[in-house]
Every structure is written in structure tokens, then in C-alpha cells.
Image 1: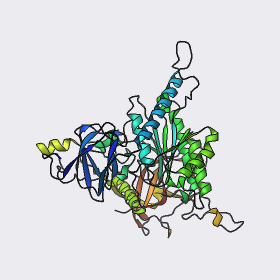
Image 2: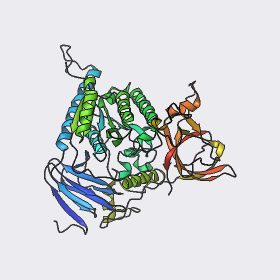
Image 3: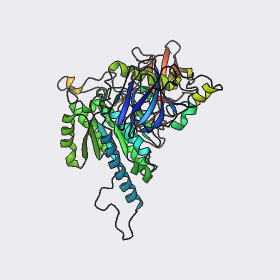
Image 4: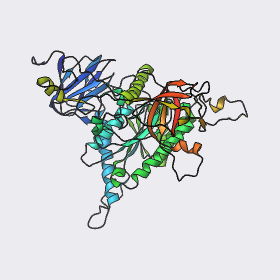
Length: 506
């Protein structure tokens, strides 16, 4: 230990290929400063001398390839150093994917030798299009983030497409969505509410340099079994849009695609086996997957190998990190609430005791120390947002629900019976109707319908992407009005919204 360290600050010396792991409790924060050597967090490199802040039950690890010294301020519930990590296996994956990117870009640009022979003759020139499968608490999202971050650090101007089809997590949006976004800079880690970064729809203005621009669709639920047919269609819509985007951009196409999936894709028990397999197939087809990574699950690896190896896909079993934390349903629910609250109100980050407050910048040593702090890769400041509470008439906003509110599985229907309402049938919702289920409901605002489309409008809304979210705070049936919380001022007249099963109240 160094005697000059501030109160509450500890120094950790990490040997090569080891990592410092930590877990935070509610209402606590942690600061980490790299003072010597090189280190990274999920593939994002730490800058020497900068102070990185973590908060809101964050659980992460600082890894070093060559060895390093870090200073830690704050009191995590758990902290320790591990010398047993799967990082070498993950790095080998990155190297293989990097070679695939280079071969693919060479082929697209026609970089042939003087003799006219392609430089990678006989080798595959497909870029890596990767699907990550694994059970709950296997570290799939961390692996996806690490692979994307390594690609963006390779110095080749790669911008891999990061796809999240886990509606229970929400990626860089909020729970209930699936999304795809090109990533051109390493994704920072600071809180479980933003495991895959911030979208520009929710990041404060001064954080825009780190914000992502996702294309998202609204599923409206956190569980894939709630409406698997709808999720299947949305996945295929997302894949079609991704390919439209990549068609005219060889660099982006060669950068590849990383698809993060929900744990339900790996659950081979229960009555949802057919749905599970169909959703995996939807991902493979929609994103033209050529590599499937199976994390820490022998049976799933064997099943996937049997199903897809014959189709020419490469199926790779990779180890699960011993640092993966078992997250329960209550933790995930808290992370979703924090995600939604952050979308509307931003976040207030408190520095751990022993560091200067993150209030208004002043002068002197405290200001200098604050200038060295980073929250999600940006200098700390006012992270708060100013949402707008506004009253709208029932007729101003067209609200739809996809399928019935509670959709029993087809196997539960009487023999010979058919559904009156299909899983993908849009139903108009009347706020004045008893049991409309709109109070405290999260609604997704959709992009305007395509003017040149001839299909029926109530079918077309299934294919419209999300442009924002609102929450219905109160309903005045007598006066046919409702109060909604929106990220900013602006008329909602004529807008279209879809309600799912997500609710939120401050």
C-alpha cells in the first residue's frame, strides 16, 4: 500500500493475464484509476491517470494482459483478484474474426495480386456474423461487448453491427425492444442500466459523443414466450433493415455482426422448445449467421452442432468466465426500472467518499480531480434530463396492442378450437374502456407509416420502428384526456403508439 493514498483508496497490483473483479450494492459507487501498466474493462481500454466511476449495482472486472497497478476508491460488496480467466480463448476468437474481416474487405475491394490471384484464394471471404447462445448468467452480453470493443480497437475503422434480440435487457434502449446499432468506438461500462451503451434518444446532450444510434422494434414484453410469433417477425424485420443498411457500405459489411440473445434461446426444457428453435432459426436466417458461439453449455453445444454444422455454420464452444455473477429476477427488475428512469430523467452519479463531489465545477485541486473523472467514457457533469408532462386528448394518440393481453399457448385451446385474435393482430385500445391497462404503461412511439405503402395500416404498424417512448401517468375518463410523460416537449397529435406489458412509475 502507498501511504500517500487518500482515505478509502486501496491499491491493487495485478499480474499478467489476471483481473480485479468487483460487485456493487444499491446506492453505492466505485472509482478505479489506472496508475501503471495497461488494463481494460470488457475490451475497452483504460486511460492512464483517468478515474472511472461505476454505480447502480455494477458488476465488472478490470483485466490486464501485461500486468498493471490500479487504485480503487469506494466499498464494493465483493472484490478480489482472479488469475483464472477465459480471456485467452476470447482473444483467439477476436483474432479469427479479424482475419475474416480482412479477407472479406479485400474480396469486396478486389485487392488482387499482380498475377490476378485473390490474396485469400481458397479461403472463406465472408465476414464474421456471430450468434451468441448460452443459459442464464453465462456472460453472453459481456462476450458480445468484448468482441465488439476489440474490433473497434483494431485500428482498421471497423464498425461492427451489434444486435440485441433479448427484450428482457433492452441493450442501449429500454427493456421490451430489440435493436441493431453500428459501434465505431469501444462501449463503456458504468451501470447495469446501460450494459450496451446509451442511445441518442436518452443520453444527455454532453454525452452525445458516446451515444449510439440504434434501429429498434418494440416487442413490448420481457419474456420471449409471451408472443414468440411477434418476436420472430420483428427479428426478421430487423435483419432485413440491417442488410439494407450494409448493402452499400463494404467497410460496414466487412466489419461483421454480433448478435446477443436471451437465455430462453438455451432453455431446452418446458413447452417452448419449438418456439426456441424457431427463434434461433429466425436469427440465423435474418442476420445470415455463419458462426455460432455456445457459452458454457455442453448439451446446447451438441444440439446446435447437430442442427447447424451440416448447413455450413461454424459452431464453437467457449468457456464461461468464473467471474460471471448470478443475477436474480429482482436485480433484473431493478435494472429495467433504472433503465426506464434514466431514459426520462437521466442519472445522478455520486462519487465515492474520498473523491470530490460531482456537483458544479469549481477551482483548485478538487476541480482538477473532477476533470480526470469519467462516467461512461465522458467527463461528469449534469446528467439530468428534463422530461415533459403533457395532457393529450384520447383522440390525439392512436394506441394499439398486438394480440390479446394474455395469450394462452395454442396447446391450451380446446381440441378443434381456433383463436379469435391472433398473436400478431393489432387491436385498437380505447383509453376510456374499463380494463384498457394503460395506467403507468410504457408505450413505444412509432415512426410515421410509409406513404407509398398500400397494405392495411393496422398490419403495417408491425413493421414500423421505434422513435421514442412515453408513459401514461393518469387517465381522466370524464374529460377524455390523459397525462403522459415524454422525453421532451412536442405535440403527440396523430402519433401512433403500441402498448405492451411494461409498466413504470417514479
